Amino acid sequence: MARNRGVPRMNHKEIRLPSPAGEIPLRVFQPEAVPRAGVVFYMDAFGWRDEIDAMCSRYAKHGYVCYLPDLYWRLGTLRFRPHGARDEPLPAAMDAANTATSVEMSIADTDAILVYACSNGVRRLGTVGHCMGARHALGALATYPQMIGAAACLHGGRMVWNGPNSPHRYILRAQGPIYFAFAADDPTCPDAHKALIEETVREARVPVEIEHFAAAHGWTFPERWCYDPIAAERVWAKVMGLFANLG
Image 1 (tube, rainbow, N blue to C red):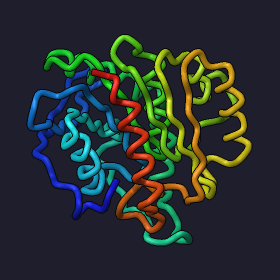
Image 2 (cartoon, rainbow, N blue to C red; image 1 turned 120 degrees about the horizontal axis):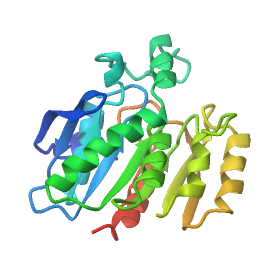
Image 3 (tube, one colour; image 1 turned 90 degrees about the vertical axis):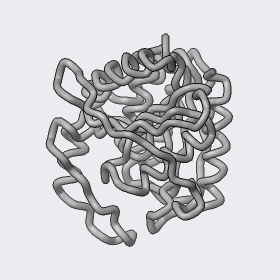
């Protein structure tokens, strides 16, 4: 989560991964040595871009094979430019794509990723999701405990809504530890949502750590206007600790 110029780029390959719903675009970032475990990186609402590639490369640099699925693949090839200032309006098409990409869809995609990982000798993985990706990382942890051992949800957005499929409910199904990092300034996760998540955590069967940061939504992204390098590096250390026992 250091700035891109400080993160060596690692070789990665892009494949089309077969699944019952179609071919999933997947980037695979391979470490130089035999991987200690795997990481599935669930993107934010802006989609694939160099910034995310560099963040995935950092996992590979630290010994993890990192899988980056394009969660928007059912909608076509969608890429959005991150806003450059707090008050810059977000694209309506991005909001629509975020809404249309359900956790149930990403859970189905994750099944194909896990089959692929297992065929390549990777049998233990963690999940990490930033912003939009946080709820997808949590859903994967709750659904695939046999392979996914931990999840990091970083300034997650839309983690709570009315209905039985609200993402925060996956906390009660999780069988591995969870780390939540909340932003103080986050309209996508207001205080009422944070309070409900914390209340749900008290009923969890697994260790859950929650940290609150005096930062804005999106602060872990090195190229974002709100990037906070001190908070981002603390989160990186927490995620590394969370994943240390995977393999």
